[in-house]
Structures are given as structure tokens and as C-alpha cells.
Amino acid sequence: VQLQASGGGLVQAGGSLRLSCAASGRTYSMAWFRQAPGKEREFVTGISWTGSSTYYADSVKGRFTISRDSTLNTVYLQMNNLKPEDTAVYYCAASTLYTSGRAIDHYNYWGQGTQVTVSS
Image (tube, rainbow, N blue to C red; front, side):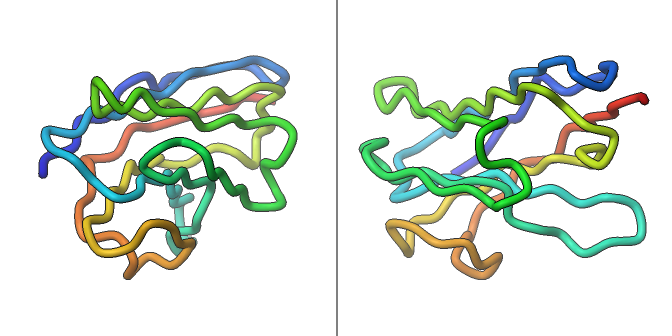
């Protein structure tokens, strides 16, 4: 499975961005992680194959929304009310092993990462 992420960019605090991630094949679950400079990669949000189950890190709950179009094998991340602390490289991840999960090792396919920069 190959993942192609897009949609990152520069936005002012309070603004919005939408990320997309297209998978070349079917997966059980998909997620977004992010990694800020000097920090470890962290879980942001995940979604089950059917889209019926979604889960979020506390830091983004209420501001970010994950969704997926299973017919297109594509997952989306709508990010609203962005904050400077959201600045990071965002990675799309997919799993053919687990139907859900927050751990990095649950995901066996990774996209190339897209930069999100939020200015204050």
C-alpha cells in the first residue's frame, strides 16, 4: 500500500487547513500522526475502515475532524482553529494489521509527510 498525503501549508492562528491522504489499496484503519521539531512523533487522530469509529488526541479534540471515503481509499483531516503548537510535519498512516489504534507500531504503512505551519 502506498500513501500520498497533500494539503499542508502555512496558515495564521485561528485558520483552517484540510489534509488528504490517498491509499493505493484497502486498509483496516488509517490515522494521522505529527512530529514537531525536536519531539517524538505523536498520534493525532484515527478512523476505522468503515468510518464508523473515530478517535482523537485530547490536544485536537473539538478542532480537528477525520473522515474517509472508502470508495476512494482516501482519508481527510479537517483542521480548524489552528494553533502555533499544531505546527509539525503531519504523516498519514495505514494499517493492514489492526482495525484501530493509537500506537505507532499498529501502522505498517506511512506517507511521506506534509508540513503544517501555524503562525501566531
